[in-house]
Length: 349
Image (cartoon, rainbow, N blue to C red; front, side, top):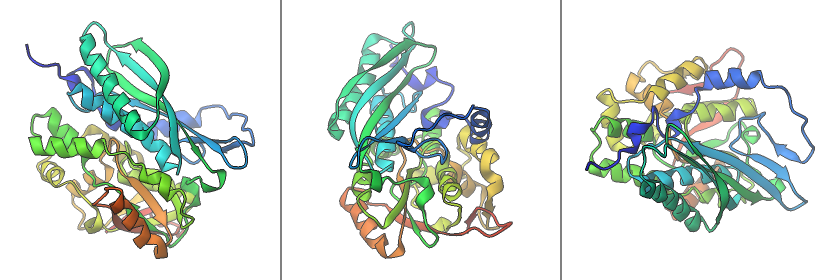
């Protein structure tokens, strides 16, 4: 018998199956305004990675949920990637995870039970590595495999890292290289090499736990993780939240070498094009930026790296911290500046 190919059961995969940003904005705009208690420090108003609710003077609860369809065929890897991606939202707020709940949707008439068991075991292994339990969850019988977590964490109320607290002059530091979406597309097309798959698995299962330490640094003003909307999309969320503009230099971006080769050969995800449709009007690309480079800017990153906005004098310390925590390719990729009337929100040269 041929092994089960999880990606064949899903129309999309990983963070590439997110609702397109333009459609999501329209849906959310029609949602009735909620009553906001004063304890709610972060809600949906600034497109942050998680909600934050003050418990007392020294603790706030960080709450998020993240789930998706398979980005890889190996069930254990799928579980590990999905769990790592979900916990990243806690780290991106400067928090420390305390527990998780599993979100499980499986086509029981199509998948053997041992495959489902391997998915859940993969997720549990990541939570064990993060030092937290999976304390419960919910499961349903659905048409496509879905797995993820509700993740809860804690952070000091004064150390929450939001999209709205970045400052003009901050440098932008990216923790992981770009190109995961392109690798996933190559995998579906049967073009991804074994080395490329190994790199993809290593990057997407690397916990962004450095965010908990960065959260202690006053010079780190804002932080997010780069996922389904791509680097450009998530940087724009910081720009909008902080009412700033940004500059990126493409040559400074850390890139996955095999992803570059694939995208130059025409391999990309549909989500990349949807992302560009949603926010491309906010970008000004230099004439020398090629189509393949644009696709890397909008490439959906499943379990991508942290994007940090910090004071320039703290950049070396932030980079050292990334490297000490195993993020060898972390790099300064741009800076934030005041928004000029009529100018593009994000400029890429």
